[in-house]
Amino acid sequence: MEFRRVGIVWNPSKRAGFEVARELKELLDEYGVSITTGITLAHALGMPELSGGGFDECDLLAVLGGDGTLLSALDYALPGDIPMLGINLGRMGFLTEVAPKDLRRDVVSVLEGRYAIDSRMTMTLRGEDATNVFALNEVVVTRSSPAVRVLSLEIEVNGILVDRISGDGLIVASATGSTAYSLSAGGPIVRPGLDCFVITPICPHTMNARPVVVSSGDAVTVRVLDDSCGAHAVLDGRKTVELAAGGSVTVVRSDLKARFIRLHDRNYFSLLRDKLSEWTH
Image (cartoon, rainbow, N blue to C red):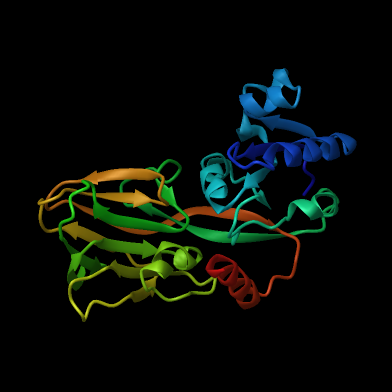
């Protein structure tokens, strides 16, 4: 696939971001590739004519930041099925592909067609528009108020009761999200590419509450059993759906895929060891 217009999405809070963006612009200019970006970066790079954005017309999104920035960029990428190239300015970078020091080499490889596409499943809530309400990592049902009270939930899979739990909440994660919040809550690590949901209780008050793995073809319903503190569903830590007492959300697989540019033959378990070691130390 030839990339004729590249959108640059950046996280302005990353100190190295502007210099990397400037180097990327110069490289794309060399190859005659059109560039689209947002207002702030466009002006900083001396491109006021591009201040309108317009990522929907791009063939590729180059995302400068960490995994959180990539999750935010999905708002532009998913509706138009646009692949993303993650340039890591963050700490973990499970989803990113390019280190700033390798920017020229790796971007040239992309522009010359030496890359692969890594497609990842996304999740949505039944009854919602998946282009607006989606998650790559997880859907978390938790308290919506700051009160430290127990939240009681009921979990069903395809209408069949799995468990009732009391605690801080529940995570429904994808394989991609198994190394995010779910991992911190005691959930299993699942190799990317497996089509499954990981259901992980958060600080449960019952000893028999354990993570459960089900097919991504299943529908996972989480129902609020009390209204002592209020509850909501949070998708990838970014989008929120409020839940009333007795209310529920049903997590299902979306037809939309998140697509990432891959340049290197990544050994997942080696990457996992490296990233978790970086986080620990």
